Length: 157
Ligand SMILES: [Fe+2]
Image 1 (cartoon, helix red, strand yellow):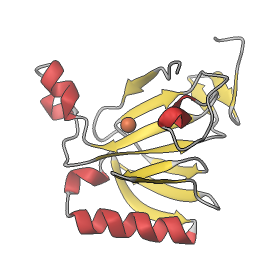
Image 2: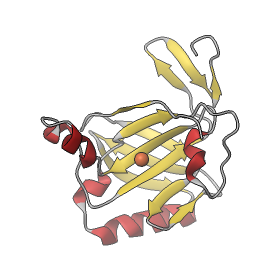
Image 3: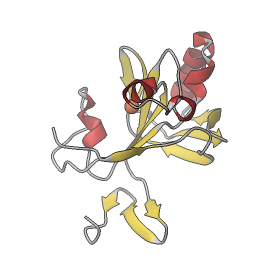
Image 4: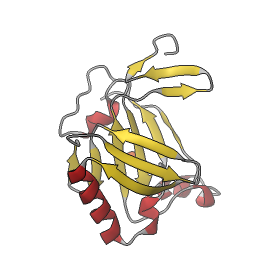
């Protein structure tokens, strides 16, 4: 299926807004691509507002509120860039590998602290882990553009 290299994001670091135009897996059996972009707003490592696509924003907010799990609002906890030119946004989670897409996870990442003692305070813990993908991101590392509007910079790969 190919790789989606990425990094763990330490707690409390995310800040800003992201528009989600790819799959959102927010329930053990549900994933959906919003008809219009979903807008997620982050402050100090927490999701603080859900807007944009009327249907999905309402369903995602309702699901999170019903969980009653504070850790589910933490994140993103991981950041991955798809590099498989053959991956598709199908019903299979290969969407995380779609070339140039960015997938981020929310909520639980405690398996990392189980594998790496000492990370407990830096890793979110929750009863759920959920993911979102944005298909047309622009990603910069310092002053180097790694992905521009979903197209990977071939000069850095
Ligand atoms: Fe994830």
